[in-house]
Image (cartoon, rainbow, N blue to C red; front, top):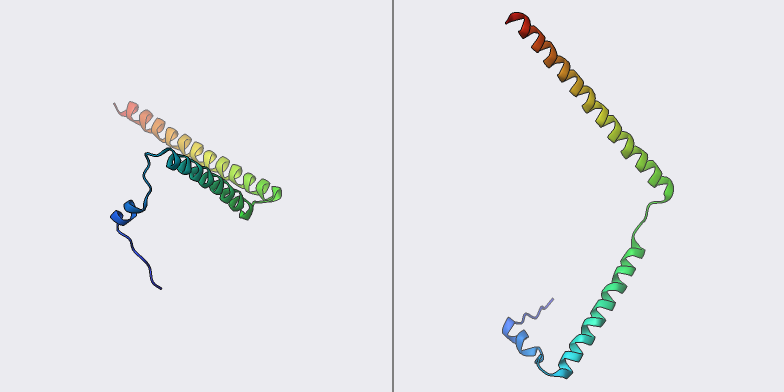
Length: 97
């Protein structure tokens, strides 16, 4: 496979002058075509996506909500346990002092 490499100077020489009104119109039209091509590529890419069906979405949502709830409850009970331990230590220190 042969790949042609052009230097930056050669690329600059190939670009048209930007100071004429015809070139400005051509560049504006070219940009509009690029935007239209970009949007059409986005639409084509969105059609290729494998979207989840509503049943799977409900299942995954319930899994995430359930896991979040149980993790939250675990953190809550750990906090209660730590508070109880600290309260016990505080009470023991008050008896000693």
